[in-house]
Length: 229
Image (cartoon, rainbow, N blue to C red; front, side, top):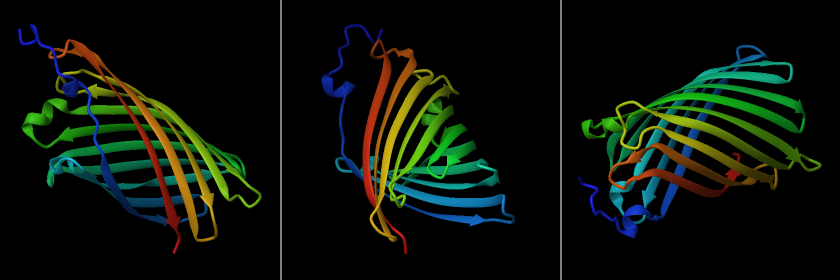
């Protein structure tokens, strides 16, 4: 029994790290008619861990889809493909199907509902046991403030589940996420934004090594500036 008399050290159960991240992207939109549009977006995210170079990763993704607008509503159907590089090596592939509905109640208030189905598959044979499918549903609200619509606040709440594919050690994962955002336009070219996001995760199977069900929490505070050329 590997678990007999085993007591993990504190730094083996909980740990913290720090890192820097850089994101960039390009979006294209084509409107064959007033109510219909086709879009394509490519994004690149890089994260550099301050303590360990082998934990640096780069995530590249390509999104494409179709959007139809009618009255005050819009419906978007999209496909997403991505690849993650860890320590300069291809590590994980992802595929997603997205369905998004938005309704603009007036010039200042917008409500959105997003459903997403994804697959995540690891490249290495030793990591294939961690493959999973992910399903999520989220609701978002956006509100414009100010006499010249120079301020925007938003909130989003959602839930989802990671479904194991190859008998993952910790089993399925249920999660809940919440984000709050604010954006301020300083002039016609420059605006700033702030995002506070939190996510809580609970796994369904007891980990045999620790005799406990694994849980995770993550909180992010993101701020930045947007410059329109």
